Length: 424
Ligand SMILES: *[C@@H]1O[C@H](CO)[C@@H](O)[C@H](O)[C@H]1NC(C)=O
Ligand SMILES: *[C@@H]1O[C@H](CO)[C@@H](O)[C@H](O)[C@H]1NC(C)=O
Ligand SMILES: CC(=O)N[C@H]1CO[C@H](CO)[C@@H](O)[C@@H]1O
Image (cartoon, rainbow, N blue to C red; front, side):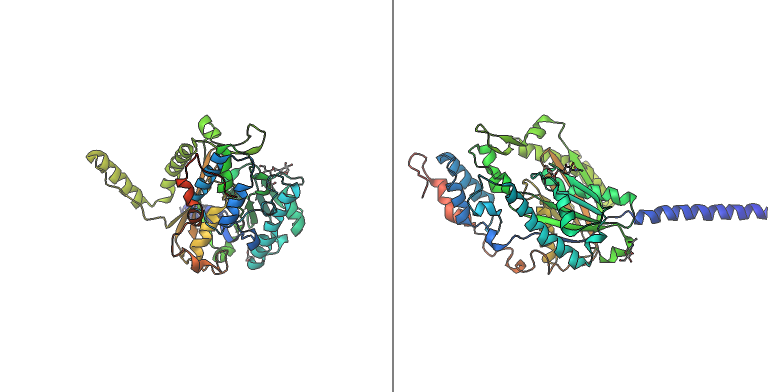
């Protein structure tokens, strides 16, 4: 009898050990962001209003109507003066890019962000176990990932992934990849490098559905250092809570709304179709449907269910809004703005709005058509004084909501087609 009781106790102990071990192992599978560095190109690459107008004017393929169309689009896009373009645009060669333009644009970004990130984190390049690079519009041989390995002399056994053609959503897809590697490999460091190469992709034709891309996309990029080493948890900035990817490529309408193609004259560019807003909305709604049960607390879900029920019963139109997610960073729409969500995150950080325990929802859209979202938990109060916004954060938001393009080119909206001439 006593022996039997002893056996039972041993069994229970063993079972508890197994359960503990299972939970403990999960702690090795978490995905933490230790630090990240957004790219700010040098001042000589800043595109001011005047220069933007000049670029449009010097494109001799544009007719009067396209010229007006583009200026109007820029005026209403709300784009500011602090955006950056690749160097070949400044040297007037946007229509005739070379391979070197593309490579040096990338090198400039890599060599600025990667060393800064690693130095600040006190991590040597040799410690990196996983490297994920995605720059979807520049195919080089060897790959850009190999270029980074060569610059920084990374280890021979590094796991490397160069994602192709993933468009604006690339950084969240790469994140998903890293999350999955972290599930099966303990104590790893991963470096995620995400950007877009604009030099070779400036569209110089006159197809309206394709010239818009030139207004939307600007230079930028982000390098992100991640780990699943649990003893580094205290140093981390964010912890990944969940990530949802929705792909509507199976629907023709969604697939065709954003594609790279040649126009009538054989000039390659990005076609943004009329169905894009609809495709984006659909992907967004499907994504939210999947992620919301994962991110809203049970209390909110219940409240939502009850409110919906009451609404249905009453057919009233009172709204319900959830306050449980602190901030939303939406990125996408453009190749150059792919990592815009990282800039938004850095902005919120520099504004000292990210406090321990806050949760941030990041959403991005990309050609395909896809919508990806993920939820980050802020691990410690963030200062943001040294990030990309550090030296100019006090200038934002600007005091006046003046639109420099409106001031300079707003008159275009009142011009008469018949008498209008492109100003010299
Ligand atoms: C990486 O890119 C190179 C070309 O740039 C390609 O040959 C290689 O197959 C790619 N690797 C992966 C894993 O996609
Ligand atoms: C995890 O991080 C700690 C703290 O930096 C370090 O001492 C330890 O060696 C790391 N573990 C592994 C397996 O790399
Ligand atoms: C770094 C890297 O190799 N990135 C890939 C991203 O996507 C393009 C194609 O769209 C690939 O050719 C690149 O190799």
